[in-house]
Image (tube, rainbow, N blue to C red; front, side, top):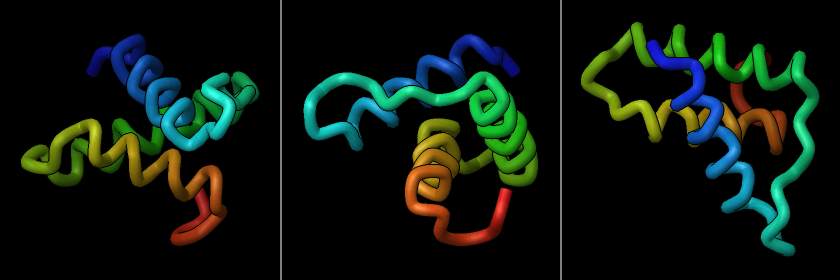
Length: 69
């Protein structure tokens, strides 16, 4: 899976949650964790679009809802 594409999706999704239009800062460790989670979750169900997997992971990252990652 292309990590650079996932990174772009993560940043795009983070920007959607930002009121000021500037992306939230995310640590390199958190970014790696999000990428790994997205890859794992997408491989579990390849019928689910990647952008939905990324959106769910970012939402959980920002709200700390759902399963701990």
